[in-house]
Structures are given as C-alpha cells and as structure tokens.
Image 1 (tube, helix red, strand yellow):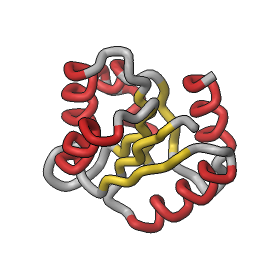
Image 2: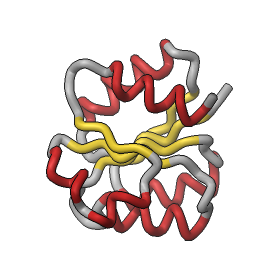
Image 3: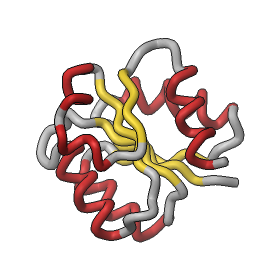
Length: 116
C-alpha cells in the first residue's frame, strides 16, 4: 500500500483528504505543520507528499525546499486555496500544483499520476 504524507494546518482538510485518499487505497499520515512533516518524513518514508503552502511557522515553500534536499525523487503535490501561488517560481520545484476545492478529482488524479 502506497503511503501519503498530508501536510496542512487545517483539521477539516485532513479529514476530507484522508477519507477520499483512503477510499482510493492509500495509507494516509498527517502532519499539522512543516516541522512535524519533516520529523515524520524520517519515520514513515512516504511515497508522496500533499503539502499546503499557507501554514504558520514554516510555510509550504520552505518545507518543499527541505523535502527536495532530503529526497529529490519524492513526489510533492502543492495544495493551496490560492491560485496565485502557482505563478510563484518557488512552487515550480513541486511535481504538481492543485487548488483546494470540494471536488477532489484533481487531487486524486494527481496522486494517481505520481504513484502509478
């Protein structure tokens, strides 16, 4: 079973994404901050990371840089409520970018693409 690390400071996103991704057959682990994500990376060795950008403390772009330094091959999908971050050059280091919505088809398709 492929493991996904979900990094977001909103509990409601964790509940929604976890339910949908577990229905797709993935093992989902949660981190509520960038710092927690970096700690969990060593423990669970995820196959993919879904990463929020706008978080208190270490933001998603900083976490993305650290993740890619640790494991350049690890697929990272940035997830944000803000379309404008997609234009930020720093976000281009991610493997995919999705805008949060209640329709999770885009997220599920991106996950499938990178874990195929």
